[in-house]
Length: 256
Image (tube, rainbow, N blue to C red; front, side):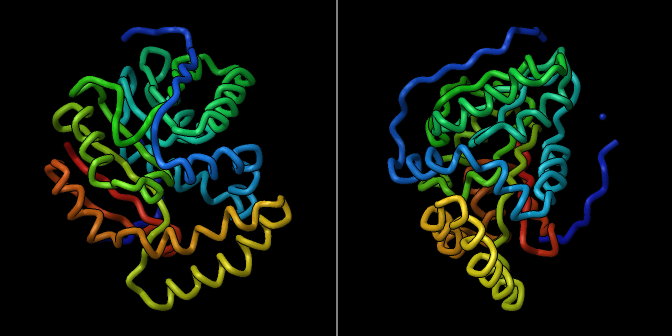
C-alpha cells in the first residue's frame, strides 16, 4: 500500500442523455437505505467532510485514466458526483454510463444533470442496475470508477469480476471508499468521528439509524492489502491501494 497526497492531474459518438430505470434484484435492505438518504445525501457529504470529498473524488477520477473521447463507467454512481467529473474528462466526444441500484439517487442525479449547462454533461446516461450483474458486453469501457460503493456490495469479488469483465485490456478501475486502517490510532479516531460527528449530524436530518451502519460497514470492509489481493483474484493484472485523507479514506487502482 502507499500513502499519497493530492496532486492535480495534467488532461465516439455523442448521444443525447437519457435515463433507463428498470427493476433489479439486490440486497433490499441496503437499497432501501440509500433510497431513504438520497434527498440529503449531497448536503451531508459536504457537511461531514467539510467539502474534502470533492478533492478525493477528483483524485479517484484522475487515477481511472479516463481521457478525451473515452467511453467510461461509474458503478454505484449515487447522485452523480464521479459521473460528472468523468464527463469533464471524456468531453463531448466521450460517453459516461452511470449505474446505481437506487432509483431515488438516479432521479436526483438526472435532475442535477438537467440543471447544468455544460455540454459535456449531456453525454451521461443513468441506468438502474446491479453491480454484481452489469448489463454490458465484455471489454466495453476505457475506464471505470466506483465511489463509496464496493463496501456496500454483498459479493465484492463478484462486483470486481464484473467490472474487470467490462473493462478493455490494459485499462483501469478506480475504487474510492473509507479506508479500513491497520493503524489503531487512525481506527480509533475514525470510530470517534462516526459516533460523535457523523451520527449526531445525520440525526438532525432524521437519519441517525441510517448512518449508524457506517461504523460496522467499515469494520466489515477490507484493508488496502486485502483489496489488492481480492482485485488480483477477480482477474486484474495489477492492483495498488493508496491511503488518502490522512488515512481515513483509501483508493484502490486496479489494471485490467
